[in-house]
Length: 138
Image (tube, rainbow, N blue to C red; front, side, top):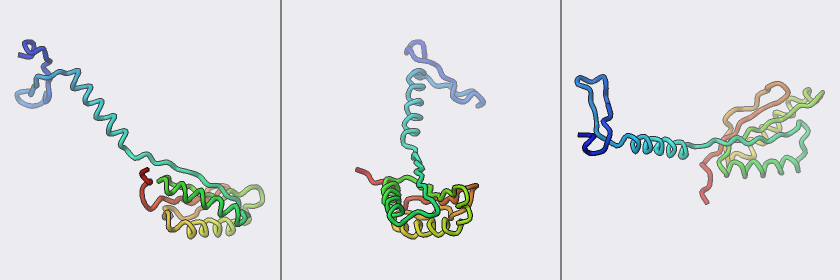
């Protein structure tokens, strides 16, 4: 019957008793499956992580400048990785770094929420912030 119609006989469930077969255009079936997979992959959410680096002695102007960039990143729907980098002997100012990160989290509270509180990793004190709402559609 499949030859008469110019189609293929495809085995759907080989373990069933008797095995289940279907008459269809196999190439078209494969093409549509590939197309569906591509569509699913395209619709998957892509998470972007932006980094903002500060020092333990970051001044108010620099802090506000980085804060504005962070707000822009969060409004675009990106995650933020904010960290204070301790260089050389500045590692003795760990509490200064933590104060800066907590102040940053407090200032950015309206745009994102803290996913991970500040913690030391080597020479860096890292904090993650996620956006409160999805990216703006324009």
